[in-house]
Image 1 (cartoon, rainbow, N blue to C red):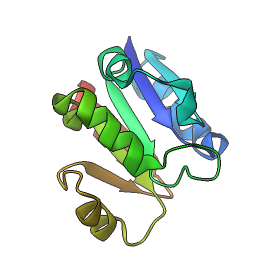
Image 2 (spheres, rainbow, N blue to C red):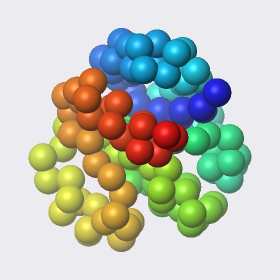
Image 3 (cartoon, rainbow, N blue to C red):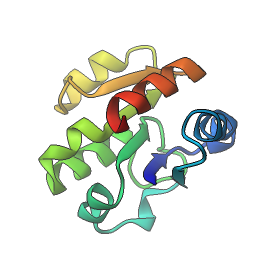
Image 4 (cartoon, one colour):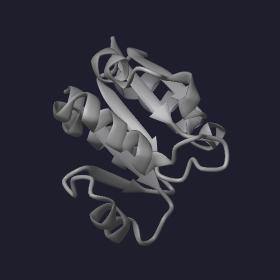
Length: 129
């Protein structure tokens, strides 16, 4: 079983894609947990240890105390090795510049929306095998 965390305030838009990849390519062995608000977590070290892959939408601000940049910074402060597990999902066209300006590592992988099945499948196979 692979545990996947998704910080996404519009999960309903990507849920079918994650379900398709889980059932079609991983025999339903992906356990997917979505959070629309960062307030549900006070211990980010718990996230880094509990989940194998962490998808973070950069634009969570309307429904969450932190945006995706804030989430990523807190995750890295809790465990600097988490960088390999984080995948940014975004519709933000200037994401690379935003990341560079924010001070988070530019090595974090980015998937731009709309996410395709192939993109999601490739990133999951690379991280979890």
